[in-house]
Image (cartoon, rainbow, N blue to C red; front, side):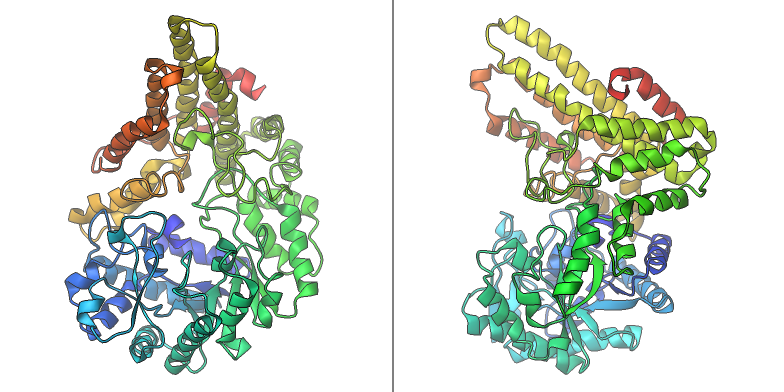
Length: 622
């Protein structure tokens, strides 16, 4: 969540976030900011040079995967030690506020990952090598791991935790530590797995006798082939005192592991809602699952100790997060109808708003936010607008980051009409920041849904039989123009709210840089995450966004290139590999186009933008 939502946050952003958490009863949360400070100090102690160390860190938008040992190094530029110091200063303020609000910080522990110079700096150390992650070039992955059985591991752990205690005081005994996130251990032998966790745990206890190891169980869900029940049990059994470990069942609403893992064999665990990957923006929820499954878990598991949020990105579908955090305080499933009504009244600062606003939320409650088919769509779906154009394999894709809608698009239009009608009946709503956000978000969803049949017709035209080349080209040009106009309208709508602007993201990135000389590097990192996600598209579109500026300068351009390719290429000669190679060259140039003029804020008011859009797409919103 930190890397997808908060890599460039200021203290003001964190103040709002911590208030939001405290008001919802959150009393335990990870505190990752500024941890590079302690990695630097501990690495220096064992002999690494500053060049060795800086070569190890990823850019600011990718540090989470550096912490987990998936990635090393940056393809955008090197981190600044001044930035690390700034983040450390920010972390001290965050920690202090967390303690004031009664939120116990979970501090990072030393996981064992070392700079790539480890074999030269520590020739006698027992070193392991992590597997290649997501086809990244070797230079950016296959991190070096210090074997927890090596006495040096415990020594470095002691130093790492002691330094944090000196910096922050005695404020926690909870430490987050993950060594095999989306990576297979070097051996599946049960004794080996038991020993790895045992040595890791003992090193933690040596550093802090009261330490509790907070452990993400995502690895068990991500690779069920390797992590069989006997291997899970063996790995967890290395921690012989159950209360010394706290397991996060990371995706409890869709892929719970606690049931197959026998409630994690007596160790305390937390039921967690993941909801989205890559901060995907579409409207989506599992409100029945989020209210009923936690109650079932309470009845069936004696070691369940809490409920939590583990979404990859936070700034979307807030009602779903609020629902779980409210459910955490109830021994019975919450009445979602009453909850949605009360939530809407609070959101719009009055219980005397037009009835249509409550009708709108009631419609999405029973449809958009009530997905029960987890095989089809277990998490927030992607809009095909944000994906690499192709002639097949885009529509109705199921599974993680799939594209299949879990409701009839006409239902979303009906809900949108009620929400919009409320604004027309009570014009003060257009001055309400929450309503402004929601009407833009819901309009975005309606337009994104309308894009699907337009795209399907484009492909149908391309492969239509019994037409001349000239006829096909003419039809493609007309339909292509229709497609492009939707994207331009979408860009206009998104530009009317700062939460949906590329410039908001890029400005924050540049402002986070320690001095102007690093601003382009930080912007490049920010651009890369939401597009190519890697030096050459290793996780392309994984963290894509529907933002103005991005819609017009990136997504629209990709679709224009696709339409042009269809026009100049006979259907029998269509080659997706050829097209994507052409596309990648342009995508790389876009990512590297830093330091230019950012989009100007939309001067039209939200209500005027929506009215104009409705007039232009009367059939869509009818």
